[in-house]
Length: 226
Length: 219
Image (cartoon, rainbow over all chains, first blue to last red; front, side, top):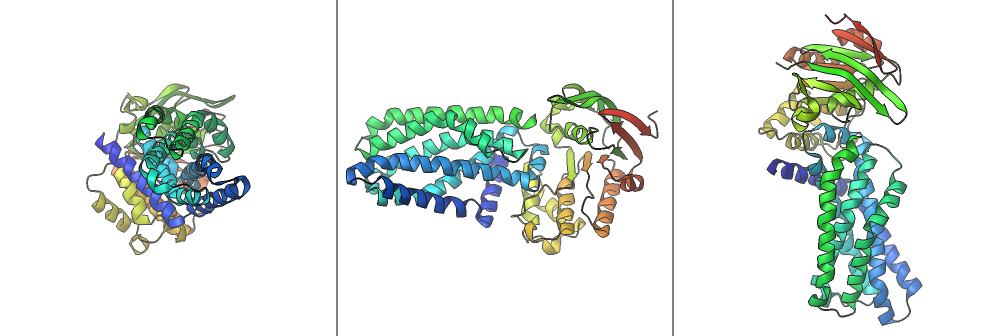
């Protein structure tokens, strides 16, 4: 167990180091997130209160697209010089391998959110400071619930190229409940809901996270071995 | 001393294709066995099955008489693999790549092993340069260091000399012979009859997923 944890952290650190050095995803995802926020604010702006209602949808749609790109790239990296073969031949459990890849993708998406969320707040007139703590909770839970299954099916890319269309096709129906839940909860929060009002949504997202993480730990092995 | 690795009636079916159709081969320790055959003969599938990368449709891979599927991670800890692709990360340095693999193998003396591997393959001078900025020969040296870092009992070589210059091929051959002399089971999958002639102690030939020849024949 400790060895698996250490291996998962080594894989995550390796992915983060490779990304921060190559910046292949961040140079695409950050400008893309910024562009989407600006475009949506120009296209859909009606008035201040209407804009605030649009913010959650724009935020989570962007996170979904960025998430698919981040995960896709994480597994492309394993195929590039066939490094994924060396990972699969190593004695690391398949669950730890998935956990490491997923943790790195999760942190990278959160990094993009650090740029995206303030931009959305500016363009859609959201008072960020008053909701920052519950919003951070929703972002962490929603992102985890989205990235975990995306990373599970992203593993198909370890073996063959051109899996992005398949990834989107399989993953979006699976993560729709998480995305919908996160978007609605964010809307409620921006509309003035209290911690108590949000408790149900947070519990729902946490339950989805547990389910998705358990599925990833168990299903990754069979998925990459045949 | 490593134990023999044996395949028994190994079958692998991919969709409608029967890649291996009941192959039984015994790979001895301290022996380099070359697996030859045309494209589609099942060589790469055999290698993937030996490495524990895929499950057989039927039949078994045995190590020391035990099914490697049951050994799982313990089995993979004994396997090293070298291919035509380096199986490394181009954004990371040689030292970083080796440290990741040492951690994944749970090597207690990781730092010492990494430095020893860098010395063995004369990679010290470029150990802190991103591999994407190194030459093909330098990358191949690190690939060998990665595969041998944990002193594997089974060394799998999948077309390892593809794209290598004469000096790099000679270094590869020397490293493979050293592993054989250490007692490892070495399986070399290649199209290159010349490489097989120079390196192998034994040659097996596959055709359409079946074993068609062994030289010398198994006792």
